[in-house]
Length: 238
Image (cartoon, rainbow, N blue to C red; front, side, top):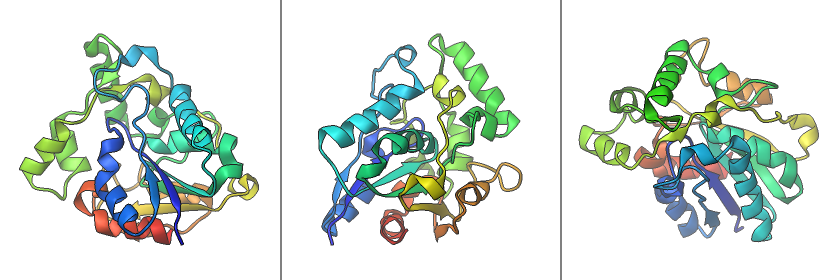
């Protein structure tokens, strides 16, 4: 049966990052939309936008295309975006899927959920940027985000990333209550994902917040590039 997917990227990425996965889902007969969110287009002014603008963009996309029975997927920081949108478009959703994503808690921003060294990095980058944005250093990308790729591939994709507005990391959204949302919720977890270190800050606390057992998939935090076949299959199974 054909399904409709709306795939929301994580920080520093545009909708282009989903293309390897989207093409595999389309080849299987599904409709796939991969928006680039406000503030993350090449050349956007990071000072112009709030986290709420990214939520509005996803809601507007779903409503303007009159989409129904949607599987809404969020990666990493995109968990904040899909959570905010889910409250407003729940009647149009088939499922809500978090892939190695943050699951917001009440009053907690992304900055509240990451290790102190990330908070210090983000604050320093934003202060030096002149426009309150954060550029992910290549060394962090190479060692923690795309650690299952060769260096030429790591460098190529890293060059496509855009600065992330810091306010997207410091603002909050209302959490969902899976028991009352009225939409099935799933979590897909990449087994080699060390973008958050195991332990206190590890990804495994987030499926617990949803009360679900994660669907595991091989690959790093950037499995959309390095393991697209496996990730597409996991999204269909979630």
